[in-house]
Image 1 (tube, one colour):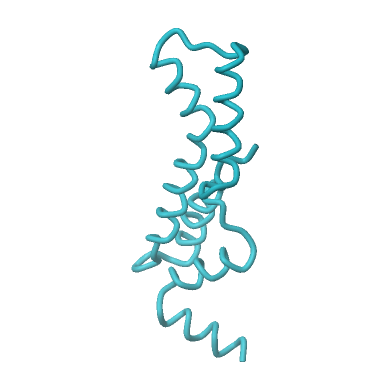
Image 2: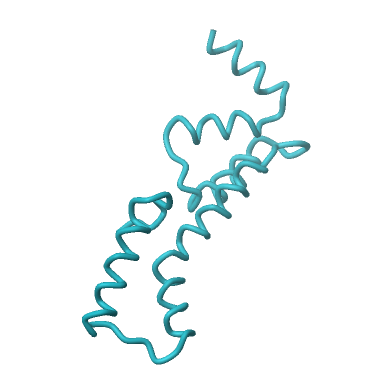
Length: 108
């Protein structure tokens, strides 16, 4: 189950399944800490992905060479959840303005 789908969807299904398993005794937790650890295990990836996406959105070339920017961008993009066109748009947004304008001119 991909727990990144937060509103409704996966979260509600997980909650219903968890409550049902607790009610019928299929699942038991000795402590609140064990229960919280289970929640973190199930949904922790979503938080990490959100942090990586935020890092990617903040990334800007500024005074870096294009090669430095590309390497930094690739590193930030790996776990961000971005792919396809949105990833390309984030790359363009972070590029130096002069280079971005030249790229847009070349596309036309």
